[in-house]
Length: 483
Ligand code: NDP
Image (cartoon, rainbow, N blue to C red; front, side, top):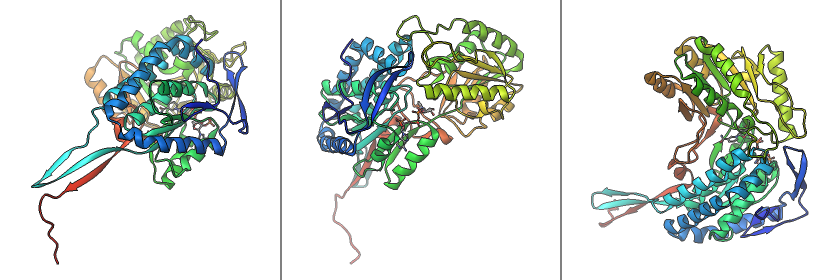
């Protein structure tokens, strides 16, 4: 396997450690074994990372976009060349099956590096003619950006934040989740190898306190967080104190609506992808599955048959298609929700139990006869728990689908295209799907409405969130003053 990260942090072009920081273990979720021991960043480490970023950023922003883009595209190529090793590492970091990580993590990170690398050379301001005078706008970098990541897609999150930030001429200090600290270090190493100047992309480790001290530091101009709504609230408030730009990619409880006329097999596939991929640890999951009454029985029967295809086991085995929860803590949270679903009267139609083996496995679980007011239909579980609800009419289901504080994603399966577009227009969600679910190509905007977030990642829209416009008024004639 390609070299593992060799120290806790990557700062100013090199791996460094400071054993004065609190030690924490990295646990392989499939076995519970400790696979690495890292140290949280001390104030000295945080200082070093922010100083390095600040120092490097000016020269990086002064390069042409094409030059910056070349570095990002080179990094994308290296990531693709090392996809196997990076996927093995991601599987150790997260417990997600290699069958997934080999097609969804370093590869999607590489897509982001390639896409924003391609855009970097075409970033422009505009020219506004005002008679003989004119204004031109310059699209400028923000400065130093802080990225803070969740544990479900550590490589992808580092790249979704790092690629647009660097394309626009910013430097980044990235803090991964303390549950999955390894992969972002490889992203930093690869960017440096691809030619990113020392200090342009740094990784520091630690828990929430390290994130909090980054967010409040006056050297930081922007904060981009992927995490839960409660953390988002805190980070947004702390950033507001210093008037910093933010992107908040937060949680969801997204609706997936299946009408009677939908292609049943595709609808079942969509519900599986939207609930059990990454063992349900995906923010945009469609965990409230509304099935129209005419096909509810057929849907549940076919779903149970298809779930017999789950191969739960060693995530490094390419045949395994279902892995453990990321941590014991997350498994406990999910078990608590399953118990709550049962006690509130929902019916377990598949799974529902902890798996009797080492590691943090829980069976893929389907609740039927769920009602809108049940806890499992209102709160984000972040585990393999699908709630199936039923409905009669389009008007009714749209109201119920939108009756949530969240607004990350929503999906509809139907053969009636006019209805599909009406539903997409009516959903209060930032990312909608018609006859599919949970695809997140880098070309498309991704992000939430309502409590699910602020700003958008990916697509050309991300450029707006990592740059700022300066207007320059140019006078071509004499200045007229009143006295
Ligand atoms: P958390 O909100 O617990 O943590 C997110 C990150 O923020 C972690 O790195 C965490 O550090 C850090 N953090 C915690 N407190 C603070 C603070 N006060 N200041 C700064 N940083 C802080 O989320 P999870 O890691 O548990 O991830 C799961 C959540 O992420 C789910 O709610 C999910 O929906 C959401 N998510 C959203 C996505 C999206 O794009 N919308 C994508 C993926 C996940 P540490 O954990 O090390 O203490």
